[in-house]
Image (cartoon, rainbow, N blue to C red; front, side):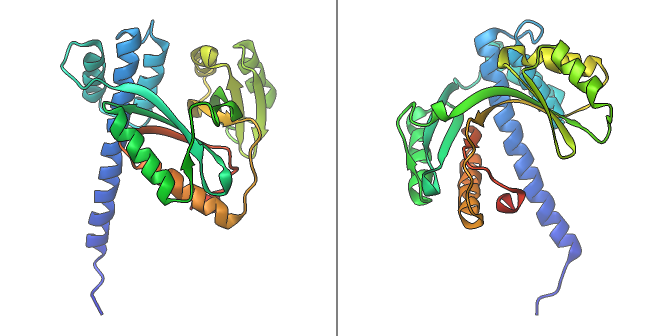
Length: 246
């Protein structure tokens, strides 16, 4: 029997974590670059850039990496020419899948996405085939156990023109129009609430219930898409539980 090395296991695990971290930073850098390219390099006037930088800071992306990505986007530094694109299709069981990507080669990314669909029980659809099944919303989560005065959180959110407010388990969920996302976020921060999560994302209009086995297959497909360097976000209409995601 091979000997067990705790230090070796730690080294392997750290290597995987470092690789995942580098991949995340690369994706965030692309996001910052495209935001700066389209709206300028000032986050005070470019809300999309501000949101991208906030996401990067939330995962401790180094300041130098952020600044370099902004300069590449504005043309101050030479960088790749990334384009935004989206792909739609169906996963196992015909469940809707929506993918956002940033790529410097549309043919490569499209081919990669199609192969992942085809090899994992899904198929790629035409533009518009599933997008209508989702709404784009700003979603902000707060720790409800940390702020027991629900009315105060509700008031702060609604005063900032949030669309909806609900408690789900140990979290308050605030949703808003993407155009008002920064305003709602800033209002909650100004009221000294710590945000657990803050992101603009696609939300299925009518989540689809799936059984455990089907849910695991869909979760596996999402992981494969997410592992692609060009893919930024993956959304599904399936209602996936923690057990399915594990």
